Image (cartoon, rainbow, N blue to C red; front, side, top):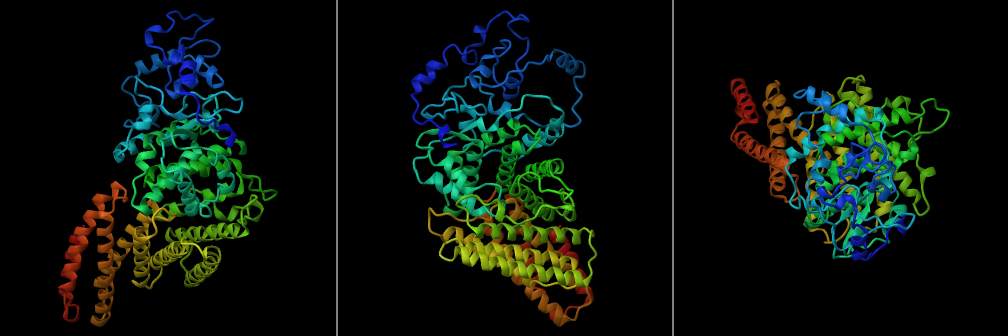
Length: 598
């Protein structure tokens, strides 16, 4: 794969090759005649989808000829007439506020070539003179981020396009030949650090990519100048950079990567995946999902995971006669994403029922040359915790009976998982600085599931909340005090914020139960003291997140509101004498607490 990239191409040769290209000529220089024999009345399918200016030459336009792509034409005149007749009606599958990402990326009519770009070469030796996805406008746009509401509107049409795509008979693209541009990175060590940061965080949690194979196609790329790379390389680097920034208090992400360019992938990906030959497209969707998790775009995560789940239903054999499906590591990656998302949203899983899955969750037979056996064991333990999450959502939604024996067994299985994976972590990372990070992350998963278990059992405890909050704070502080420039982990993701806000809500609900129940004054005083201790820790954590420069902007209003409410609640409880309270005073306090938390 690395041989596809030709470095330091003479830019003057590239500009000469573009002379006379209709895509780069002014509109008035286009041929003024159109006949059925030489020209078509409409743009070809490829130029139409990519918002390119099409020469409309028949049977192949100049752009498709240049890129070596199949060129198809369709007559859009009838569609236009129908649209004019039905003007004012909206597509029932398309939100009226949705915006085409491709139109945002390509809206600059004065598009110019990138300068100082290392251009990749295709397999036949010809140079790709322009990215099929991006433009200079997209590469320069959004260095300081963009409005989250606009982003949600942009992704609003994703679900409807997924639903419609299987019925579309369009030219299917080879996405491995599509490129995005990474802005120049002066520090030559950073690109590789971004990649290793991605794999450190997700290699065994979402095991669909192989580090050894990935580095093979990555090692020959120079990033001293603006450089075209494959979509998967771009997404891995972009996610790794977000994680790196939070660990090193840098802001490289907005300097090297474009949000709009990443979002443009949604319009380019074909959702008509028919076999394992389209596995690269599934990998891109997973990477897009992981990116959305790291920028806390919940709508995109839910839609992409839902599509991948439906994809597995069509491409997986359930008879048990063989294990033919999307490759095993990709299958279980989608499983892991679905189960954690379902639990955090308190929604039924979109995945097929666990009991009918015949594919084994062992990964020894999936390892590539250079991968250790311990990696397969870590992948298996990752599936195990997501199986436990699946059991928890079944308990919460009443899909499984909440018998005392079942809850006891669940607690036992969860503890066995913690012991098993901690042994692996200590053995694998004993000499590495990531050891404490991974231990903290394991404890977060463990204590969060115990908190969820508390919600479906008759007993309650603030102890698990204390452990969850303490581990969260330790990991966040470790990001600031760790050695600069090294690979690390990060909590700034959709999944952690969902867990954190749910833990806060659980504790408020428990407080109201304490005040309403007929407890002795001694019991109530003990529990209120534990709650106040956790509440102070929650407030400190909220203030820390408000001041953090790497906290997603969409959480700021909620964080500030929570600080105000919980500080007022803390003051109210500190001034309440629980040792001498009457029932009437307790009832009055309940009403005040309810008024504070809204």
